Length: 318
Image 1 (cartoon, rainbow, N blue to C red):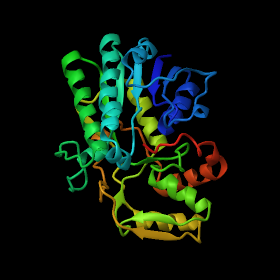
Image 2 (cartoon, rainbow, N blue to C red; image 1 turned 45 degrees about the vertical axis):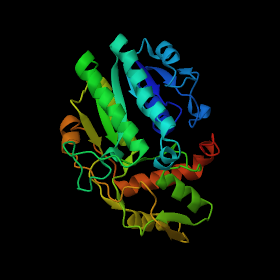
Image 3 (cartoon, rainbow, N blue to C red; image 1 turned 90 degrees about the vertical axis):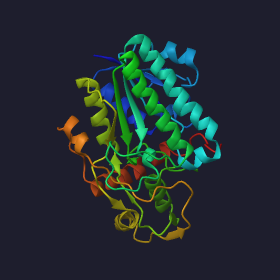
Image 4 (cartoon, rainbow, N blue to C red; image 1 turned 90 degrees about the horizontal axis):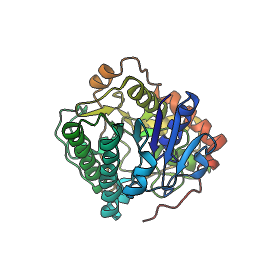
Protein backbone atom coordinates (compact mmCIF):
# COMPACT_ATOMS: atom_id res chain seq x y z
CA UNK A 1 0.00 0.00 0.00
CA UNK A 2 1.01 3.60 -0.55
CA UNK A 3 2.63 5.88 1.98
CA UNK A 4 0.21 8.81 2.26
CA UNK A 5 0.60 12.10 4.10
CA UNK A 6 -2.34 14.11 5.38
CA UNK A 7 -1.58 17.71 6.33
CA UNK A 8 -4.13 18.96 8.81
CA UNK A 9 -4.63 15.34 9.82
CA UNK A 10 -5.71 16.24 13.37
CA UNK A 11 -8.57 18.37 12.09
CA UNK A 12 -12.11 17.62 10.97
CA UNK A 13 -11.70 16.31 7.41
CA UNK A 14 -8.14 15.15 8.00
CA UNK A 15 -8.95 12.92 10.96
CA UNK A 16 -11.84 11.31 9.09
CA UNK A 17 -9.60 10.74 6.08
CA UNK A 18 -6.79 9.33 8.21
CA UNK A 19 -9.15 6.74 9.65
CA UNK A 20 -10.30 5.75 6.16
CA UNK A 21 -6.69 5.39 4.98
CA UNK A 22 -5.74 3.26 7.99
CA UNK A 23 -8.79 1.03 7.51
CA UNK A 24 -7.66 0.31 3.95
CA UNK A 25 -4.14 -0.59 4.99
CA UNK A 26 -2.16 2.47 3.93
CA UNK A 27 0.90 3.77 5.74
CA UNK A 28 -0.18 7.19 7.02
CA UNK A 29 1.85 10.25 7.96
CA UNK A 30 -0.04 13.00 9.80
CA UNK A 31 1.27 16.57 9.80
CA UNK A 32 -0.50 19.07 12.05
CA UNK A 33 0.67 21.92 14.27
CA UNK A 34 -2.34 21.41 16.61
CA UNK A 35 -3.24 25.09 16.42
CA UNK A 36 -6.84 24.05 15.85
CA UNK A 37 -6.61 20.27 15.45
CA UNK A 38 -6.83 17.84 18.35
CA UNK A 39 -4.16 15.35 19.34
CA UNK A 40 -7.01 13.03 20.37
CA UNK A 41 -7.94 12.87 16.68
CA UNK A 42 -4.59 11.27 15.85
CA UNK A 43 -4.13 7.52 16.23
CA UNK A 44 -0.43 7.63 17.08
CA UNK A 45 -0.24 3.83 17.23
CA UNK A 46 -1.35 3.55 13.61
CA UNK A 47 0.24 6.68 12.09
CA UNK A 48 3.49 8.59 12.07
CA UNK A 49 2.67 11.96 13.61
CA UNK A 50 4.68 15.15 13.12
CA UNK A 51 3.66 18.24 15.09
CA UNK A 52 4.86 20.57 12.38
CA UNK A 53 3.56 23.78 10.83
CA UNK A 54 3.36 23.84 7.04
CA UNK A 55 5.06 27.25 7.27
CA UNK A 56 8.23 25.49 8.48
CA UNK A 57 9.67 24.39 5.14
CA UNK A 58 12.61 22.42 6.54
CA UNK A 59 10.57 20.43 9.06
CA UNK A 60 7.82 19.86 6.51
CA UNK A 61 10.27 18.42 3.99
CA UNK A 62 11.61 16.01 6.57
CA UNK A 63 8.09 14.85 7.43
CA UNK A 64 6.81 14.41 3.85
CA UNK A 65 9.84 13.50 1.75
CA UNK A 66 9.09 9.77 1.33
CA UNK A 67 5.34 9.97 0.70
CA UNK A 68 3.84 8.99 -2.65
CA UNK A 69 0.68 11.07 -2.08
CA UNK A 70 0.22 14.27 -0.07
CA UNK A 71 -3.38 15.16 0.72
CA UNK A 72 -3.04 18.80 1.68
CA UNK A 73 -5.85 19.88 4.00
CA UNK A 74 -3.96 22.06 6.47
CA UNK A 75 -5.18 25.64 6.39
CA UNK A 76 -5.99 28.64 8.49
CA UNK A 77 -9.75 28.52 8.04
CA UNK A 78 -12.66 30.91 8.59
CA UNK A 79 -13.59 34.09 6.75
CA UNK A 80 -13.97 36.23 9.94
CA UNK A 81 -10.62 35.00 11.21
CA UNK A 82 -8.92 36.03 7.96
CA UNK A 83 -10.44 39.50 8.14
CA UNK A 84 -9.02 39.83 11.64
CA UNK A 85 -5.52 38.67 10.63
CA UNK A 86 -4.97 38.55 6.85
CA UNK A 87 -1.18 38.17 6.93
CA UNK A 88 -1.29 35.06 9.11
CA UNK A 89 -3.94 33.62 6.79
CA UNK A 90 -1.73 34.20 3.75
CA UNK A 91 1.33 32.73 5.45
CA UNK A 92 -0.42 29.42 6.18
CA UNK A 93 -2.72 29.06 3.20
CA UNK A 94 -0.53 30.41 0.38
CA UNK A 95 3.08 30.12 1.55
CA UNK A 96 2.33 26.87 3.39
CA UNK A 97 0.93 25.38 0.20
CA UNK A 98 4.00 26.52 -1.69
CA UNK A 99 6.12 24.63 0.85
CA UNK A 100 4.07 21.46 0.29
CA UNK A 101 4.51 21.80 -3.47
CA UNK A 102 8.26 22.22 -3.08
CA UNK A 103 8.37 18.86 -1.31
CA UNK A 104 6.39 17.29 -4.16
CA UNK A 105 8.60 18.91 -6.79
CA UNK A 106 11.58 17.11 -5.30
CA UNK A 107 9.87 13.81 -4.48
CA UNK A 108 7.38 13.38 -7.34
CA UNK A 109 4.46 13.00 -4.94
CA UNK A 110 0.87 13.43 -6.11
CA UNK A 111 -0.65 16.45 -4.35
CA UNK A 112 -4.38 16.54 -3.65
CA UNK A 113 -5.21 20.09 -2.57
CA UNK A 114 -8.30 21.44 -0.81
CA UNK A 115 -9.33 24.88 -1.99
CA UNK A 116 -12.63 26.64 -1.33
CA UNK A 117 -15.73 27.80 -3.16
CA UNK A 118 -15.13 31.17 -1.48
CA UNK A 119 -12.85 32.04 -4.43
CA UNK A 120 -15.99 32.81 -6.48
CA UNK A 121 -16.82 35.61 -4.03
CA UNK A 122 -18.36 38.53 -5.90
CA UNK A 123 -19.54 36.32 -8.77
CA UNK A 124 -23.20 35.87 -7.89
CA UNK A 125 -24.11 33.67 -10.88
CA UNK A 126 -25.60 30.27 -10.04
CA UNK A 127 -24.79 27.47 -10.33
CA UNK A 128 -21.02 27.79 -10.09
CA UNK A 129 -18.86 26.09 -12.68
CA UNK A 130 -15.12 25.95 -13.09
CA UNK A 131 -15.06 28.28 -16.13
CA UNK A 132 -16.48 31.28 -14.23
CA UNK A 133 -14.55 34.39 -13.28
CA UNK A 134 -13.33 34.54 -9.68
CA UNK A 135 -13.69 37.47 -7.30
CA UNK A 136 -12.43 36.84 -3.76
CA UNK A 137 -14.14 39.02 -1.16
CA UNK A 138 -11.96 38.16 1.85
CA UNK A 139 -8.33 37.48 2.71
CA UNK A 140 -9.25 33.82 3.25
CA UNK A 141 -10.62 33.52 -0.28
CA UNK A 142 -7.64 35.42 -1.71
CA UNK A 143 -5.19 33.13 0.08
CA UNK A 144 -6.91 30.05 -1.32
CA UNK A 145 -6.87 31.51 -4.82
CA UNK A 146 -3.17 32.29 -4.48
CA UNK A 147 -2.59 28.69 -3.41
CA UNK A 148 -4.58 27.47 -6.42
CA UNK A 149 -2.27 29.50 -8.64
CA UNK A 150 0.78 27.80 -7.17
CA UNK A 151 -0.79 24.34 -7.54
CA UNK A 152 -1.49 24.95 -11.23
CA UNK A 153 1.93 26.55 -11.79
CA UNK A 154 3.77 23.58 -10.28
CA UNK A 155 1.70 21.19 -12.37
CA UNK A 156 2.62 23.12 -15.53
CA UNK A 157 6.23 24.06 -14.81
CA UNK A 158 7.44 21.01 -12.87
CA UNK A 159 4.94 18.32 -13.91
CA UNK A 160 3.84 17.76 -10.32
CA UNK A 161 0.69 15.59 -10.48
CA UNK A 162 -2.05 17.60 -8.80
CA UNK A 163 -5.75 17.31 -8.01
CA UNK A 164 -7.29 20.68 -7.14
CA UNK A 165 -10.60 20.42 -5.29
CA UNK A 166 -12.80 23.37 -4.32
CA UNK A 167 -14.76 22.37 -1.23
CA UNK A 168 -18.29 23.68 -0.62
CA UNK A 169 -19.44 23.79 3.03
CA UNK A 170 -18.26 20.38 4.21
CA UNK A 171 -19.93 19.03 7.36
CA UNK A 172 -20.17 15.83 9.37
CA UNK A 173 -18.78 13.91 12.34
CA UNK A 174 -15.60 15.11 14.07
CA UNK A 175 -16.20 18.77 13.13
CA UNK A 176 -15.53 21.08 16.08
CA UNK A 177 -18.75 22.81 17.15
CA UNK A 178 -17.70 25.05 19.98
CA UNK A 179 -15.11 27.66 19.04
CA UNK A 180 -15.53 31.24 17.84
CA UNK A 181 -15.12 30.36 14.16
CA UNK A 182 -17.01 27.07 14.08
CA UNK A 183 -18.85 26.22 10.86
CA UNK A 184 -22.57 26.89 10.85
CA UNK A 185 -24.02 23.36 11.04
CA UNK A 186 -22.01 21.95 13.96
CA UNK A 187 -22.33 25.25 15.80
CA UNK A 188 -26.12 25.28 15.42
CA UNK A 189 -26.44 21.62 16.43
CA UNK A 190 -24.21 22.13 19.47
CA UNK A 191 -26.17 25.15 20.67
CA UNK A 192 -29.46 23.33 20.10
CA UNK A 193 -28.18 20.43 22.20
CA UNK A 194 -27.51 22.88 25.04
CA UNK A 195 -30.97 24.42 24.68
CA UNK A 196 -29.49 27.71 23.50
CA UNK A 197 -30.72 29.89 20.61
CA UNK A 198 -28.88 29.93 17.29
CA UNK A 199 -27.80 33.04 15.39
CA UNK A 200 -28.59 33.56 11.71
CA UNK A 201 -26.76 36.39 9.93
CA UNK A 202 -29.31 37.82 7.51
CA UNK A 203 -32.90 36.71 6.98
CA UNK A 204 -32.17 33.01 6.49
CA UNK A 205 -32.68 33.07 2.71
CA UNK A 206 -28.96 32.51 2.09
CA UNK A 207 -28.21 29.16 0.50
CA UNK A 208 -25.37 26.66 0.79
CA UNK A 209 -24.33 23.59 -1.21
CA UNK A 210 -23.56 21.43 1.83
CA UNK A 211 -21.28 18.43 1.25
CA UNK A 212 -21.13 15.50 3.65
CA UNK A 213 -17.62 14.62 4.77
CA UNK A 214 -17.96 10.99 3.63
CA UNK A 215 -18.40 12.25 0.07
CA UNK A 216 -15.19 14.25 0.33
CA UNK A 217 -13.39 11.13 1.57
CA UNK A 218 -14.75 9.10 -1.34
CA UNK A 219 -13.47 11.68 -3.82
CA UNK A 220 -10.04 11.99 -2.19
CA UNK A 221 -9.55 8.23 -1.96
CA UNK A 222 -10.58 7.73 -5.58
CA UNK A 223 -8.29 10.54 -6.75
CA UNK A 224 -5.41 8.90 -4.91
CA UNK A 225 -6.02 5.33 -6.06
CA UNK A 226 -6.86 6.15 -9.67
CA UNK A 227 -4.33 9.01 -9.98
CA UNK A 228 -7.04 11.44 -11.05
CA UNK A 229 -5.42 14.77 -11.91
CA UNK A 230 -7.22 17.98 -12.81
CA UNK A 231 -6.08 20.49 -15.43
CA UNK A 232 -7.47 23.28 -13.29
CA UNK A 233 -9.81 23.33 -10.32
CA UNK A 234 -12.77 21.01 -9.79
CA UNK A 235 -15.72 22.00 -7.61
CA UNK A 236 -16.61 19.38 -5.01
CA UNK A 237 -20.35 19.66 -4.38
CA UNK A 238 -23.40 18.09 -5.99
CA UNK A 239 -25.63 21.05 -6.75
CA UNK A 240 -27.84 21.07 -3.66
CA UNK A 241 -29.04 24.62 -3.10
CA UNK A 242 -30.11 24.38 0.54
CA UNK A 243 -31.55 27.49 2.17
CA UNK A 244 -30.64 28.19 5.78
CA UNK A 245 -34.27 28.56 6.81
CA UNK A 246 -35.01 25.11 5.37
CA UNK A 247 -32.06 23.72 7.32
CA UNK A 248 -33.49 25.24 10.49
CA UNK A 249 -36.80 23.47 9.86
CA UNK A 250 -34.91 20.17 9.55
CA UNK A 251 -33.16 20.88 12.85
CA UNK A 252 -36.50 21.56 14.52
CA UNK A 253 -37.48 17.93 13.83
CA UNK A 254 -34.72 17.00 16.28
CA UNK A 255 -34.96 20.09 18.53
CA UNK A 256 -38.63 21.22 18.55
CA UNK A 257 -37.97 24.10 20.96
CA UNK A 258 -35.15 25.59 18.90
CA UNK A 259 -35.02 29.40 19.10
CA UNK A 260 -33.56 31.51 16.27
CA UNK A 261 -32.04 35.01 16.46
CA UNK A 262 -31.80 36.83 13.13
CA UNK A 263 -28.95 39.33 12.99
CA UNK A 264 -27.33 41.68 10.48
CA UNK A 265 -25.34 40.10 7.67
CA UNK A 266 -21.61 39.72 8.31
CA UNK A 267 -18.83 41.23 6.23
CA UNK A 268 -17.52 38.70 3.71
CA UNK A 269 -20.39 36.21 3.89
CA UNK A 270 -21.43 34.87 0.49
CA UNK A 271 -25.20 35.03 0.02
CA UNK A 272 -25.75 32.15 -2.41
CA UNK A 273 -23.87 28.94 -3.09
CA UNK A 274 -24.63 26.13 -5.51
CA UNK A 275 -22.34 24.08 -7.72
CA UNK A 276 -22.78 22.73 -11.22
CA UNK A 277 -21.49 19.16 -10.67
CA UNK A 278 -20.96 18.28 -14.36
CA UNK A 279 -17.15 18.06 -14.15
CA UNK A 280 -17.28 16.29 -10.77
CA UNK A 281 -19.59 13.60 -12.14
CA UNK A 282 -17.44 13.22 -15.24
CA UNK A 283 -14.21 12.67 -13.29
CA UNK A 284 -15.79 10.65 -10.45
CA UNK A 285 -18.79 8.87 -12.00
CA UNK A 286 -19.09 6.15 -9.36
CA UNK A 287 -19.45 8.43 -6.33
CA UNK A 288 -22.99 8.72 -4.94
CA UNK A 289 -23.48 11.44 -2.31
CA UNK A 290 -25.71 10.89 0.69
CA UNK A 291 -28.99 12.83 0.81
CA UNK A 292 -28.58 16.00 2.87
CA UNK A 293 -31.22 15.47 5.54
CA UNK A 294 -30.00 11.91 6.17
CA UNK A 295 -26.43 13.16 6.51
CA UNK A 296 -27.58 15.95 8.83
CA UNK A 297 -29.35 13.43 11.07
CA UNK A 298 -26.20 11.28 11.22
CA UNK A 299 -24.17 14.33 12.20
CA UNK A 300 -26.63 15.23 14.96
CA UNK A 301 -26.49 11.70 16.37
CA UNK A 302 -22.68 11.70 16.29
CA UNK A 303 -22.49 15.03 18.11
CA UNK A 304 -24.96 13.84 20.72
CA UNK A 305 -22.86 10.76 21.44
CA UNK A 306 -19.30 11.94 20.82
CA UNK A 307 -19.41 15.73 20.51
CA UNK A 308 -17.60 16.37 23.76
CA UNK A 309 -14.55 14.58 22.32
CA UNK A 310 -14.03 17.37 19.77
CA UNK A 311 -15.26 20.28 21.88
CA UNK A 312 -13.07 22.39 24.15
CA UNK A 313 -10.06 22.14 21.86
CA UNK A 314 -7.47 24.85 21.20
CA UNK A 315 -8.82 28.38 21.13
CA UNK A 316 -8.75 30.22 17.80
CA UNK A 317 -9.12 33.82 18.86
CA UNK A 318 -6.31 35.43 16.84
